[in-house]
Length: 244
Image 1: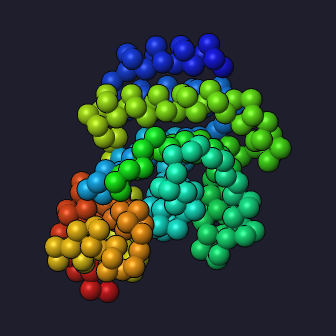
Image 2 (image 1 turned 90 degrees about the vertical axis):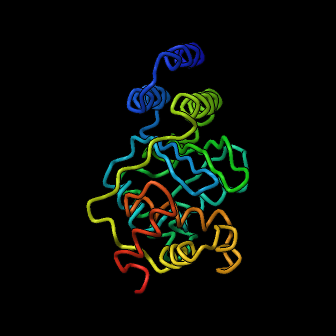
């Protein structure tokens, strides 16, 4: 893996498009015995970017259901820069009802357990990568022990290189066709934003963590296909989505 990691760094230097960067990372992920990856980046304006090989149906479902708002792996990534592993089976057994539903659905798409690598979580920003597998727990532990250190280096280098190559921001995720189903918390955040309340003020008003507010705004952007939180709020207000 170490020799291939060096080759991976050399390969990335010649790649300039999101699709080619994604495909190069996927080769490293598969070479290490994993199945998919998702690299997510949000900035201090709540704009979200994604490069992923997750099944598109799961990406859509995750956004539509607002799962970023309750995903314990996102919460942990927002708190610490340390790489960590997670197992969906644990959350299916010990999480609350919504978290159990999240990981039960993820399992159906081959997203069972993984390792999360965080590059940046300062000032309301978050850039991180989750690398996942559907292998049994014991196989997963062996993979992490044998391949984890080099895979972590590859993920960190990929995130730094991708942001620099793509002008500081990953591409916005495509909006699903049936995208305008906002949950109550997303509507509240958009309504307050439309009234001129900044994300930090929304967090104070709703009693939520700043990272949770930004996750709700990012999810709403994804659902509405908007380029920014402000555009999402304007779109939702124009279509009467904030009154229900």
